[in-house]
Amino acid sequence: MKNLKISGLSLLFVLLSTFLWAQSIAFEKVKEVNYKGHMLTCDDLGNIFIGSKSKLTKLDMTGGFIAQYEPMFQGKITAIDSKDPRRILLFYKDFSNIIFLNQDLVNAGTLSFYSLNSNPRPISLDGLNLSFASLACLDEYNDSYWIYDDNTSDLVLIDQYNQIDFRGDALDQITDSEPNPNYMIMESNRLFINNPSTGVYIFDENGSFVRKLPLMGLKKIQVYKDMLFYASNNFLITHNLVNGEESFHPLPILNFIDWSLNMYSNPARINFLTSTGVIIYTLDLGN
Image (tube, rainbow, N blue to C red):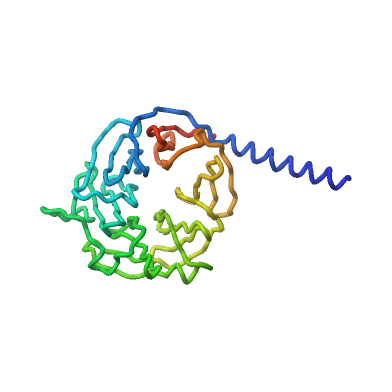
């Protein structure tokens, strides 16, 4: 009986500790705007990007309209990488097309800041034998971008001239089963790939495997310095990449389509895409 009491007290302590951690982030609603879509992200300045079928809409951090882009074709946006405010990557999986937009959402036709394209067109991956590409994101510090080739499970780096620079490690050589990743992002010279059935895989700037995080069933991850964020079971969860510690923070919204986090603005912000629009919150980190 004494052991049962001690175990019960230990469990209560853990629950109370989790609750206290959960209170360390406070959400304050800023605004709700009526822009709908299937995908949401933001840049390091806090600007918000909404993918709605083939169309991309850009809002400022308070929800004010800035610009809109819609291509000539009607494919659905598969990935948006808008971390760098000066260049936005759009990936249309169904067409194997990459489009690079500038800060005004004008098709730049090129990844490089220093090259001008007078007749910008979508960049086709078919000519590189990457017709089965399923994920794409910008390389953080170079004029290049990463592709995940679903056919070979390779990580492929494409240079500013849209030629293959090199291939990194193949994901299927690391996973215990056939990989089916759904999200890829680069932060602090590390490439993160989320494979819901087996976890989050971290690669270095050369596409070489570093380690795996046993975080299963995730739809999306966000990374800021040495903290990885994900949403699960009505919580925003922070995962410390150094020591593996996690803290749980109850979300202010339970039903949402997508979410995006901006830790670079002051205060930090989190945005939710719902069936009725975008809801913007500031975060009080309790620092």
